[in-house]
Length: 89
Image (cartoon, rainbow, N blue to C red; front, side, top):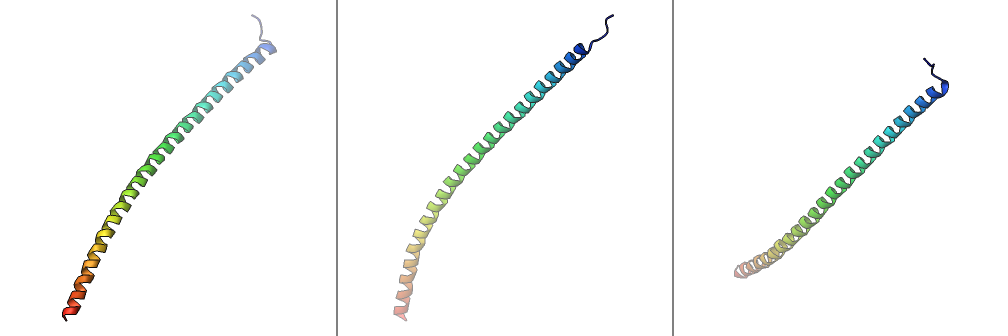
């Protein structure tokens, strides 16, 4: 049997280190890309929520304008009835 030389041991350690580093970098990159995809999905979700919120706000504003217009007409009628009642007194 031939005893292991220092060069062979250094080579095995070097290859093991290289494989370990490559696996570590690959895992790191996969994690980074997964986080980036998650962030993009989250941003898209927020964007949809914001768009729905804007639509709801515009609808509420329209409804409020209609109610205000109706109330204005009603207020004019009430004022008219009050004037008539004051004139009758």
